[in-house]
Amino acid sequence: MFKIGDFSKLTKVSIRMLRYYDEVGLFKPEGIDDFTGYRYYSAKQILELNLIVALRDMGFNVADIALFIKERSKEKLEEILKVKSEEVENNIRAEQIKLERINSTIKDMKEERVNMKYNVTLKEIPSHKVISLRDTIPAYTAEGMLWARLSEYLMKRNIPCNDFAYATYHDEGYKEGQVDVEVVMGVYSLMKDDSGFVFKETEAVEQAASILVPGEYSNLTGAYNFLANWIEENGFAMCGNPRQVAIKGPWNETNTEDYLSEIQIPVKKQQ
Image (cartoon, rainbow, N blue to C red; front, side):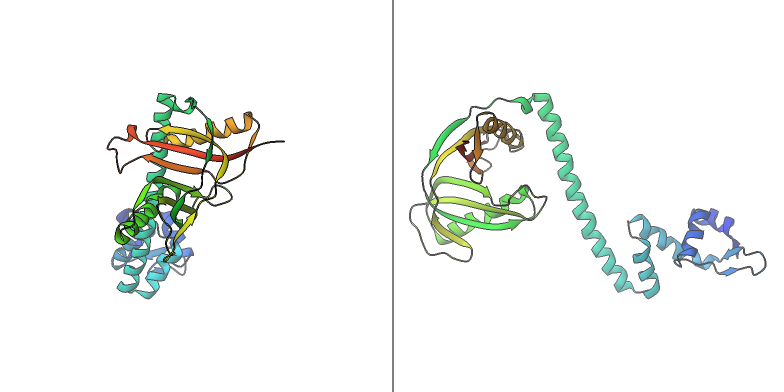
């Protein structure tokens, strides 16, 4: 058998970690000298320690590793590996979103889009016949899921629609996830509601502060900030959910610089 120092050298696991694994009951030495208290390990334990280290490096905590070591089941290992795989994939997606935001901010700073000036107009929005789909989505960036479902339904039912289209957000405030979003497209006649697809007439808006936002969708954040400041500085208050109107996008433009969106926020003059 090997003393703890020699076993540490052979396995590339520190003495401190070997002692810790012993203390928490995850990996115990083959034997302990009754007189000196020295820990001794055997060569046959190396494979088990290698597995523990591998699971640790994958991000598993001590409790999960101990559960597998206790059961010694290939099925259990496969199960926890699948769960960890899904967790890692979710983390990768979250980090990718962060990276996109970082790159977008760098680009905005270079092009001074944060300080871009927009032309704000006050407009009346008439009532429209529409079909709408409202659902909860994982994040604001997943809005395309709803547009795809709505478009598929319109094509399947052969329902003609016009170029009136917008998305609106029903949550009281900004949410990190589980976002309540409604997408709307204009139709020429109302039909019977069907499995979440609702036909209705939208309420007319007496007055909305509106700006056109050219370019890729990352520009919308700065545009919302600009419009919020304009509303406050000009003595208005919000009186309804913002609408994000899609005028030009990936369905009719290949270059993101040619995209065009409109933000409409219902407002009223403060007393």
